[in-house]
Structures are given as C-alpha cells and as structure tokens.
Image (tube, rainbow, N blue to C red; front, top):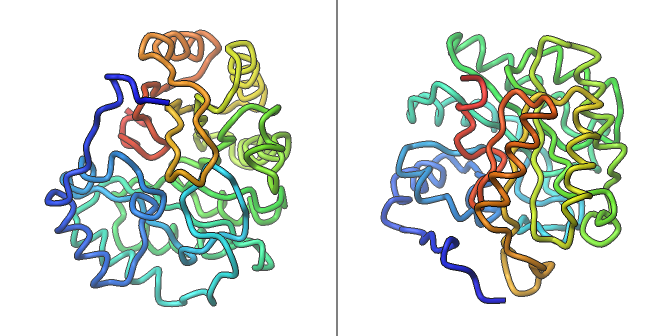
Length: 279
C-alpha cells in the first residue's frame, strides 16, 4: 500500500548524531533506534530519548515490532549507572524507560526497573519518570516491585485490539495486559497508568471503541493512539492507513470515556511527547 500524503515524515540522520554518539559511547540502547521509530530525528534533535534497558534482544515474537528477537544476553549490572550518566548529560527533566521482554528472568526484569527508578529519584530528585513495562506474565509481585518504586507514570501497552492478538502478539494475552494496568492501579491508585494502541492492523472502529472501554474499566488514565508502520517488509503488513480525521475522532471518544490525557495522530507513539501527559 502506498503511503498517503500525511505520512511523509523523513528521518534526518544529521539531527541524530549527537544523541546517537552519546548512546554509542555509553553502550546504551534506545527503543527509538531499535524499533525504527519515525520520530527519532525529531526527538534526538531535542536531546530526548527513550532508554531501552535489559539489552536489545526480546524473548517474544510480536509481528509488528522491529526489536531483535532471540536469546538475550546476561543482564548488565552497570547499565543503570550509564543510563543515569546519559540523563545527566542530556539534561532530561522527564525520562521514559522501557525494556525488551525478558521471559528468561525470574521476575521479568522488575527489580531492574525498580532499582533504576530509585536511583534516578535519589540522584536527580526533581526528575519525572515514566516506565513502559512488559507484562511480567501478570505476576502481581513483580508489578508491585515496580509500582512501589514510585514512578510518576506506570505504562504498559496493549498495542492492538483483542481479536488481533493471535495474529500479531502470539506470546501475549489481551486480558492479561489489561490486568497489568488494573493491578498497578490497585496497588497505588495515585500513580497514573498509561497504555498505547496502534491502528491500521485490521481492527474495526467498533473494536477500537471496545478497547477504549476495556481500558477505562481498569481505570487507565492516559492513552496514545498512532498509525502502525511496519519496520520492514518482513513484518506484519499494514492493512489500512487511518486518516488524521479518524485519529481526532478517537481522541474525542477517548476523552468522553474518561481518559485524562490522549495523544492521537498518525505519528504518535507511546513515548512521543511523553512529558505532555502530566501537564
């Protein structure tokens, strides 16, 4: 399918060089690079990056994702310190930290998330922290580890509607992902929860609205809604390009349903303009 005129964003490598060089120097990964995000030059030019911890190899096989899949390396115990160093050098006041899914680890990497939150709060007390976590197989103790570390936003993406999980998220479960958001809110009702969903995978309008209802039932506060763009020709094929007007419609619907902040546009991604959500 040929991209429509509203999907014409170009990546400017020159705008990426400074941040890319810093990440290379500190041997750090970003989801911006590993997932081939189309916003990378815009964000890197503003010295903004979303850190990808626990390596760059995922144990899941989601068909839409550009991150490497396979057997991960051992956890780098000095990674958190290097993330702290990068945040200081970039002067970030708001940071998003995510990870690959690590089903090989007993706690799915929950302790690593908790440790880095605590470390950042200790060293940079004024910083706002958003964590975008995997599902931890729904384990409440692992979710609690992260939540009790007091991130400002606890985020977990459902990614798509329930019907498409067997096609694009074979190793994940829609209801389990909803339960992750519910458990986080139950543990700490005062912490804002967030999710993200992609459109253009073959969902219907009714199914998107049903997903919004499901998310509100678990008291999810924030949502990002963006256009799915395949990272390569071997990934799941885009089924439809959603118009900007439809993204506006979904934003209006989400607000009416009770979401406290909604970003909805073709190039919106879960960490894109993340500092807007807390106002």
